[in-house]
Length: 179
Image (tube, rainbow, N blue to C red; front, side, top):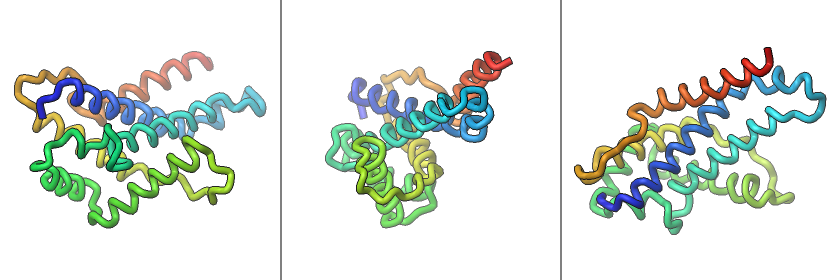
């Protein structure tokens, strides 16, 4: 993996996923309290929903439709596909069939609710994000471990710490603003 532009692009999408997912989780139990003074306007609930949509969209850019240009299969050389899939299944604790079913759920959710908002779509619950998070972590590590040695990675070392820092930064301003 030595295409710097493609690696940078995928890492940018991964970072976007981790930011949105972390901020989504941080707001999850605070929206009601933060929105209380705004009546029915619900600005923080809206932000929470936008973060959910962005996390789904970012994840689907990397794991969604296999024909998409941003899909991991277009970045990772074919000879490494099985090694990545093995890592992916180990980190998600799913079989390949279960992961593909989850992937299809996320793509359907993105297509029918996030992007196109199909009014005839029987809304299923929002897919759980543990699998999305673990698969994104796996892809991030795989890219970093298998990138050409001449490519310098200057992003976060630990995505969990990165996510915690982003969420803390966001909440610190929200809480500071409220007092």
